[in-house]
Length: 156
Image 1 (cartoon, rainbow, N blue to C red):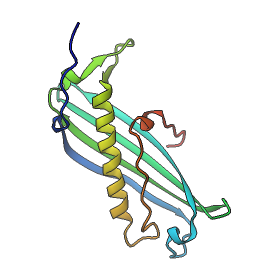
Image 2: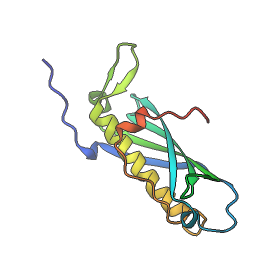
Image 3: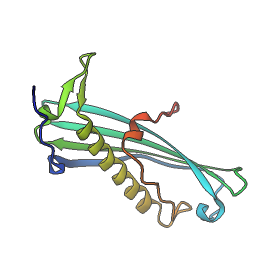
């Protein structure tokens, strides 16, 4: 029986981060949305590319938010972000495998670790990018990385 490869977080090396899209739509009237909103709905979509020869994993994270007032009525304000994060993974071959469909996949530990890093990085980017805008003070929640692979978003 083969043993599982030892995983160290240091195996994941961020090499490039790009904000591909940042969009705010709706009537904001120069007012901080946080002052008007009671809640928001966050949808996410994470796509993953694995490039074994280069030892790279690329995550593209799409996030959308719809804002609601205290009565649950939409504020007709939406924002969306698309952020691409590229990583070099030391010894990627030992942390990936071919699934039953002959598609390359990461081990769960590696997949969820990189997803957690991607989402945490996106939280920080969105927070700092929104300073001085109507979105100032909006902080994305901490989530379990597994949920990024369960989430669906039918719109591009």
